[in-house]
Length: 328
Image 1: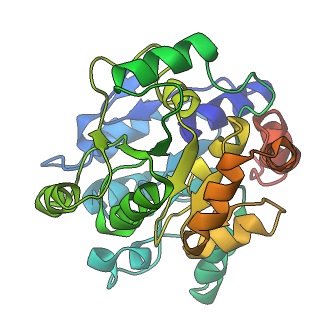
Image 2: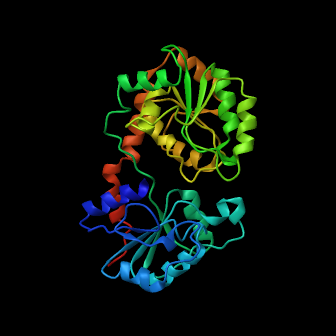
């Protein structure tokens, strides 16, 4: 999703954007770039796809070693060429990749991180980077309207007075689902986990759900409505992001855009984002959140939306990118 926003921002800066990927609807499909591809693409394939390109943006391929052979091919092709390496994650931030070294580097490249934690960690390893935070459409109407809210809640078996806690994430150890379940129970709410279990977490998730002290919904009860995740936010009363680690954690800002209170975990980047002035509820403040729900104060929601609009608006992304792009 952030890649699409970058593409739009680059187009506004006058670039003709060409997309290259291992899967999906793109201009140049190179299956060897995909995660888990049995063989990397040939250097000649990559070079041909990028032949007429002035600037290449590499989205996380050279960051996490999910396809290291393909990353090595791309790095060789881009040597000496203007490029931006956009790092969403770094190897040592994931336990299974802790022994991997830093991303490749080149004098013609610019490195961009989505948080200051990663920027500082790259600096320690000899790579200069700039932080460009994720961006959001903060000037559009929040959610998808009262009719969609009612319809989604009805599909979940909820009445007008029932509380719904939405955790719009996948299920992995670092997503801390058990804390989300506990918070929902403390609020007397239904817990809705929007994403699936991944990386073998299914059995643990089944155990947690079986022992939950609140009703639990996993995924969409039927086909997702046209509004998708926006409809889920609209249906919710509270957004939960109890994670122990996130590279950014989009629900931190999306909750503000959709005017929902946020219950957030103690992941390091959360403190970095909170410093912009967001007013959130910590995992130890479930009672305070419950009191807020009993007597909602819209000034909190107004404040959080204003912070999101001032610092994370997608309309400002072209200017932020213009300051970090390398000379062509």
